[in-house]
Length: 304
Image (cartoon, rainbow, N blue to C red):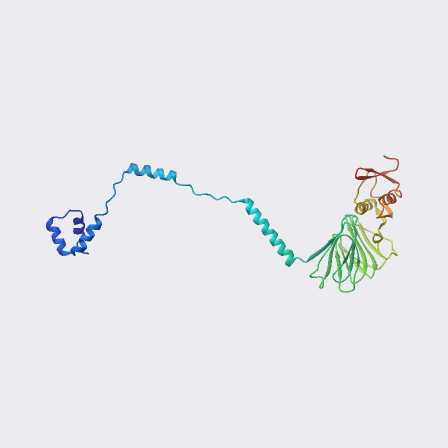
């Protein structure tokens, strides 16, 4: 549009009559009048500076503070716990194929393995293996004591904290307790690896380690361990090991008072009569015992 300056002066009433007429002649009259009409509807607001400032401050104070959402830790931990359970369940369902068998105090248990070999667990023992991998690798982990009748086949391994026992097909007993490791062969041939020592045991031979020392053991003629017949037998075994076995078989607590628990014991005790078992251990060693609450006290003759 031409003559913008004159048009603005017209809207502001700054033109003379003659200048207005000249402007109307040079521009489209209808358009100019419409522009003038709408422009007149807008008034520049008069601003009260002080009032505006007060209103601004009042609006700022009344303005709601933004909400700060705090993390609900109870909900967070609950969700985390559920997620952990789900993941654990998935792991055990799809990835973990470990099968375990355990015995408690004064309990034995017979277990048939996937290849129909047999394991009999003595009291307070645990046997575990990967069932999914069994066909490719007959490999077990033992904590405690167990007797094995192994079907012939590929290598059969029993892993303990003290050493590893390997066979192809045989009958043998493995005992791994605190400060005690013993492997006894009843049939076939047994290979025992203890630290850097490897030993092969034919029937009637025993490999024994007590307190980290390999012990010499006499040959035997038994066909199976005595504990399968509910009797524990010992040949020159420290008293503390005998006491530990008494505690496992009878679920009792024994305390030795002034007694040398390193002295060696040769003999046996039954698993079916606690009083007879206690006498079978104490009398040969010239010891006596008394009962104080739930504890049995071993002491030397003449001392009370």
